[in-house]
Image (tube, rainbow, N blue to C red; front, side, top):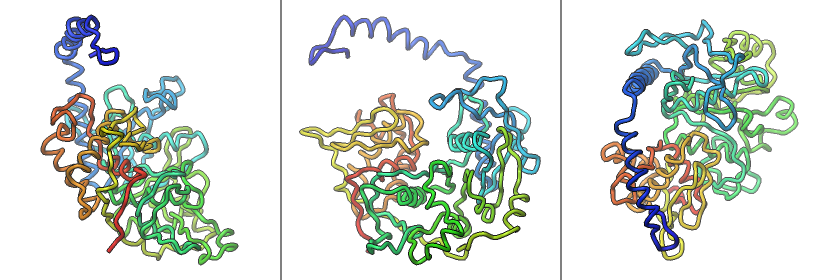
Length: 437
């Protein structure tokens, strides 16, 4: 109710209840266009058919011919409307055809599991393609331009995130032998560097269930991604604690089945490890895999470590005492916009969790964390098992179960993925992780 302090403003409340609310209900229940609803249902059927096809055919992403990938601006999700806009057209060698209900099969570019590179000059559409792929974990509505850009559901965007909090993460596959003898198998810091945060983001995402990593060189730590031949010659391997991603990306897929889609603009060394190389040329994709391999074979410039095993994954036990929702005499768990969760006296910054796309998801993430803290965390159960439990319960009971409105849906929650729930938990600065036994 509208109020001033503890006093309800009766006249304003009466207008809301007797004039505005009936109009909204009438429009919502009786005012929708049946044709638009039917269009949306048909599109959803087709999108789910493509997702099923991806799983059955070992594909990580599909971009349909005719898709409009550029957006209106950096802060808008609307498709770019311009006479210069180039619609997407798959390279012939990568074009596949997917049968879908209600229409003829859809043709487009299929990216298979493994190591996929997206290369090209600046402003030619590399990051635009990756952004479309990262948003493809969700279904788009008609008119978006990316309706048939579909990515397997567990794909997770990875970036460097200077200054973030890291608690009890095993980053040893990438960082070890620190000069100060700090344990990187159970690594914690309140102010991670670019390379450390990127290593932690990868390991945390894998722990939460990611099977595809999406990485843009522009938002990555350079020393985490590559170490060229000259730097290898100058700084001995035993003096460099960072094993760059290029030396782990192959074993990551071969040993653990985790694929990578990587945008690269400055490091041709990745040609050697790539299964597929797509070059964006004025927003048009070209399959340059063979040419890239020929260039790589022409002269090997860096010493590789491809025979190094990636290493194992450790499941962390999160301590229940990490979650104190009390602020003063009351508990406070709430979200502000898309990027911030207030948990007790702490603010969880989700600015770099790029696949959160709506504040309703962020509110739901906050509610899920509170639910887990109250009912599931017990110091004995690993974080992945906690995520399994809450995911299963939400599937069975609906998202209403995490609502603070006594099991009733407040109308402002959208079901989040486990990956974003894990991302928020991992950014809680009060998070405590039990040491491995």
